[in-house]
Image (tube, rainbow, N blue to C red):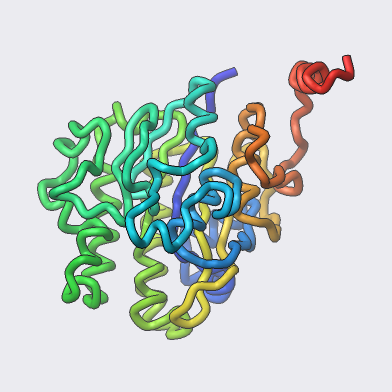
Length: 317
């Protein structure tokens, strides 16, 4: 069976309630939702970027994967020190290649087959943010200055509303402009932080203000899908927003031939990784604490050989 082309859009702080409220004001996302399974992706407190994304990557809670807020803030832990197997590890071990671009909480970098350009909190000039490092030669010369990690170290840039929208445009165009050799991986992921900045600068409840940031993310969704032309598209956020604070109400979308259309669900962030692995017919590691989102599938495929192997491992046959 040919491997499907998978696109993962990681949109930090994309809020379930805000998406429903803005609906057709986000034309690309709203149209995609009508053809997809989508809904609320419940986070777990404490609602911090690194711990939530690490839970999505590993299908475990912070106390298991080890990326807690206190240790992450002090630089003691990061993407490279996650204690358990990640979904990227499972994919790589089963012959699937991955490319990660600006995905939040992917710094310090860890080995990924095939490439990674780290997202927040990577700063840039003085740190290793890409592997292989040659990929930086294929990005615009001013790329580093528009990365979220760099902008958050500069107070004037941090508080410049329009600059964050401009940054999203720059990052999106840099991603779309990557040479084919980078886009030809099995799972390609793009991270966006523009919606998160909306939350912290003024709040998602200011509709006119918030729409500017949400529309920037919506434009990225439309243009990136058009550029990549994936067989399957996934969208996740690490948490939602309530005013200027984080909330439990993240967002998820699953699109492709095996997923139901216009199907609203309510699930947990640790259920994402097992669902992707099930889509591909891969065994789910025993360390993963989440469940497969069966209600997202049109008709789950029954792999008789896989079931036989599992029964044999349990000693039933």
